[in-house]
Amino acid sequence: MRFLCRKKISIHSATPSYFYPVVRLPRELAALAGKTAHIYQTENDENLAFFITVDKSVDKICANLDHNEVDNHLSAIESQITELKSLILENEKLLQNISKKEAPESGFEPESEPRQGLTGTSRPSATQHRCVSP
Image (cartoon, rainbow, N blue to C red; front, side, top):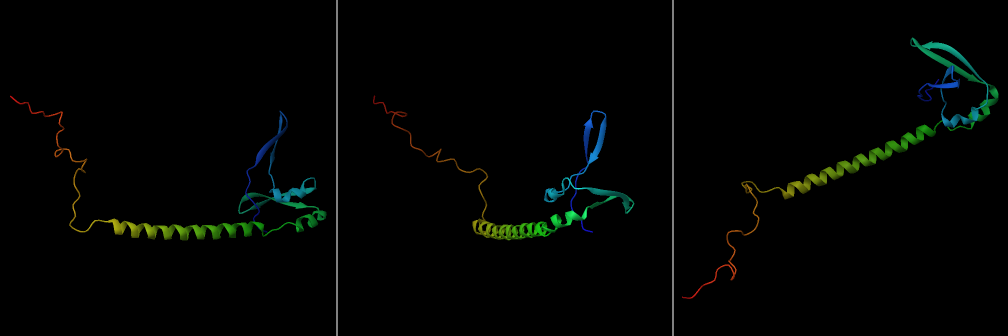
């Protein structure tokens, strides 16, 4: 037996006073719709469990399903994650090299306040200071 999927049990109501639980199968098994299923109640590790069988005529439908589709999809995602991880590590190394190049030499002390221009050394304009002749 292999794990198929994890689904939440929902409630369906045929009438306002009649409710019953519903478990949906994966879309890949849509061909089973309308077929007869036999459901058995059992236990698995002290948990409530159900065993479902479907008529033999459905075996041909299920034989056409690709059971490896999920495994192939996961493998593709894993390879993409591995590639992204290597690119991130490569970029981190580049950033470390750049920050080492831009680091100041030893003994360098930055100014407490950066300069905002030449405020105290500018020449006064002619209109500010006019020499008045006597």
